[in-house]
Image (cartoon, rainbow, N blue to C red; front, side):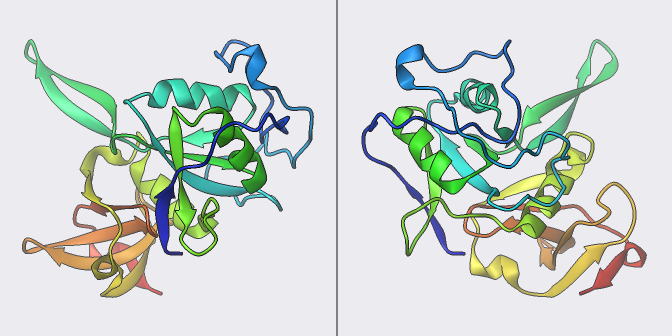
Length: 226
């Protein structure tokens, strides 16, 4: 999928179907005049982030404005929509002891799992908050394959993200070399390409058209070509 960022027009007053999860009553949501959903979509309440998406639901990438990821994440979760924000673990020394902090890996980027039409309608109500990465041909939110999203989550979750670096937007050169799957360890199940960067062999994991991250050296015994 060749993707780009696309902005939508003004709010058209559509009533929004709910997302994949029950609303969280403690999370801040949109104001009453923005409309609330009454429709139903397939429930993913029991799904883990890396589970396959039910029919009609896909992952989509968003660019969030003004460093408001926490706010926008809460908006979606209030509507019952599953979200994901890539993170990494940063280690620092504080008064003689090591402190591990979870921080956002890629500024302004987050992902949601929902219906495409629901996302378009919801975007109309929040033009000032975010844009979605769109399919270049149809100008609609570009769905991300579950396989890509699963690998990306596996290497950018808090537990795994100590040795992950963000390499920027996706590009063709990151889709060359040996394609492999990790067989064991904290990245088990992740798929990507082995590429030499500054004399080091790294596992490159990409969300097509959105972002690329690189994982530090993984022993060849833990890799299989696919």
